[in-house]
Length: 226
Image (cartoon, rainbow, N blue to C red; front, side, top):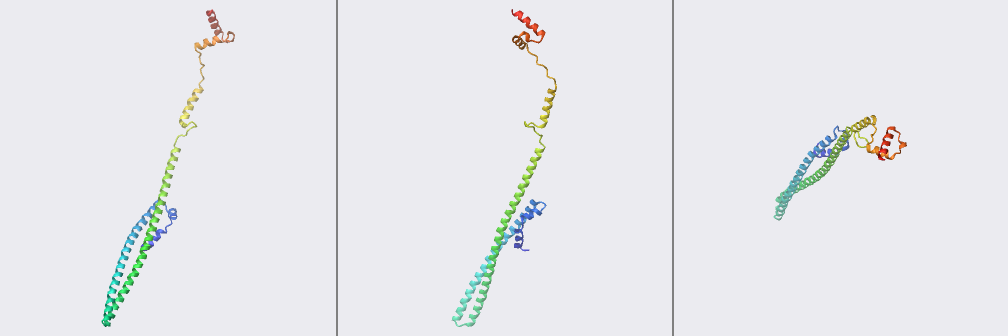
């Protein structure tokens, strides 16, 4: 398989098929890029070689044409001198050189077509490499995003559950236990202060007081105030 056939094979590569059939799509695309870059170097070398060869062919054509002109001049001089034998020999050399020049011209044209084909293949190969690189970057980005999402999910799954107030479950349970314990204990009645008792006794009529001892204290204070 020559260079152009290898390049055409790479250019025909279906990236979707490569990705679907590969165990590691990212690795497969990187290998494809590597192969294409190797062929790209060879194509560039071949283009330079073909251009140089075309220049040589053109130079040979020009040399043959120039030499042929000298022989035709000799043939004319021989005819003017009446030397037909020399004229025929000179014309024979002229014709040979003209045929060689035509042959080099044809080779030069073929070489130019080859250079054009190689340049087209080079451009298409560069575009294909850019396409494969884009596909590889997309796969790499998707893989990286999937890894980030998985890490976020793992972090959320390992995070303590929170109640409606934003407290984690352990803190809420601890507070609930503390509140439950305090609520389960009987509440001690609030003991009125002396000033509160005096204010209450002063404002409440004597007959509304339910405690006999309190009535006595009230009575004593009324007597002292008189």
